[in-house]
Image (cartoon, rainbow, N blue to C red; front, side, top):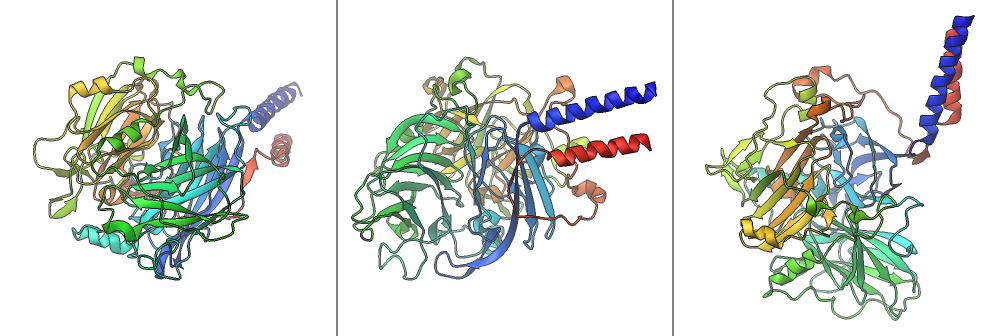
Amino acid sequence: MEFLGTIMLRLVLHVALLFSFSFAGDPFAKFDLELSFITASPLGYPQRVIAVNGKFPGPTLNVTTNYNVVVNVTNKLDENLLITWPGVQMRRSSWQDGVLGTNCPIPPNWNWTYQFQVKDQIGSFFYFPSLNFQRAAGGIGSFVITNKNEVPLPFNTPDGDIVIMIGDWYIRNHKALRKDLDAGKELGMPDGVLINGKGPYRYSNTLVQDGIDHETIRVEPGKTYRIHVHNVGISTCLNFRIQNHNLLLVETEGYYTEQQSFTSLDIHVGQSYSFLVTMDQNASNDYYIVASARFVNQELWQRVTGVAILHYSNSKGKATGPLPDPPNDVYDKSFVVNQALSIRQNVSASGSRANPQGSFHYGSINVTDRYMLRSMPPVVIDGKLRSTFNGISFVNPNTPVRLADKFKVKGDYKLDFPRRPLRGPPRIDRSSINGTYKGFVEIILENNDTVVQSFHMDGYSFFVVGMAYGEWTNTSSTTYNMYNAIFRCTTQVLPGGWTAIMVSLDNVGVWNLRTENLDRWYLGQETYMRIVNPEENNTTELAAPDNVLYCGALGYKQKPQRTCSSSGSTISGKLPIKKALGGFFVLLAILFL
């Protein structure tokens, strides 16, 4: 009996620990997302688009700092699928990143559950499918992380939140676009710009055909809204503006900015911003919301302009007058650089914790390594049109990198990515960067392509310390902002120019570095950075999840898909007490049998 009493005491202690972890930990938010094809006519022509839970675009996922996020994704498409979460820093868990270098794809009619924590994060992001050019067909939704109640916003609480997703759009479906690229063709001018999945308001009888469904944003006069704007398009930078209204920029991709007003702002592919907009105009009529193409022949591209309507509840008429003008900077190259560099971090604001964002003094840290990533116009390599970084066009390994490491699959990838552009002819390869854990790296992004590009790094945010037209030289570093540069995960690189970023490699895993221009990404303009902690045998990285998918050399390990229920509900909470108690009594029963 004494022995039995000892076991009972230990069991009670274990259960107490279970309760302490279950009820003192961070809450869970659960979402079910089903991706499927539906027919829609965003530009007046029926076409197949990718819906999320039957919606195009998909639902907004709202969570709070430090939540554990569980997303069950069901693939009802006719091809493989992965969902990626750019800007959501999955600490120590690239297993959940949702790109081919880190995850095996979800086959058709299968489901897979992502689970990650939005540890110490706030801000505006979006999710999308990363494979097979699918983002050109939809499958996109906003992902917003709000402050904990005990961490105040650096501005008055808005009266409401509004999500606006802008992006260029083709009437050809994503498979046809993919086929064109595979055949060595350029995609050409898009057919339009969508706002929240809808075509333009008929602001012009000659440029816009009748009968197109447009987006209407309904607001109350006198109220202030936080508007989250995402450029979810393929390759076009868009200038965003609202007729007669100022855009007070307050946050971008997870960090609060110095607050400044814009009449319009260039939003590059993959970028997200949030603005405070006060409805302070009279209600004699509605107002235009505009997203128009930049860095192109604007006169030629007029027909692709996206236009929606801002409608006051007491509005007395339709929007009138010409569309608000975009920036007039055809002969002033300095405008776009100055606007970009004016976006700076609010170092006195609190973010995810109750301490200022600027407490991390990046300017006093020694740079341990430098990489130059140069992009060039697409070239033909081995008979195929390809895009490159440093002369290397990346092809994804058959077995994802960390899976290959775990099971010692040899020859699946290489850690020989060059620090500077290759001198020889471009090649197709699986070269990745061997990152140094806790290193502080400077990356110079040089754009020798003819189009403006967006650069993105999964798993991290980085400081955008410099940007200019022309060639980067060693003296360029004297122009860097080493105090309050914006900290974000996506930045533009102007054609014929460079952008300098700095990043602290403190997040172990394998992380994708890529252009967000979907055509260039599809053609191979990406690589990966592998970061391990050698001091602890990389135990600081989370283990592979129990539901990990297998493919490539490890495909034989994959078991048949089990049928999983999908409630379609969203749950926030912790382990239910009945479930926990039930498990406790089961243990007791087993013990005394």
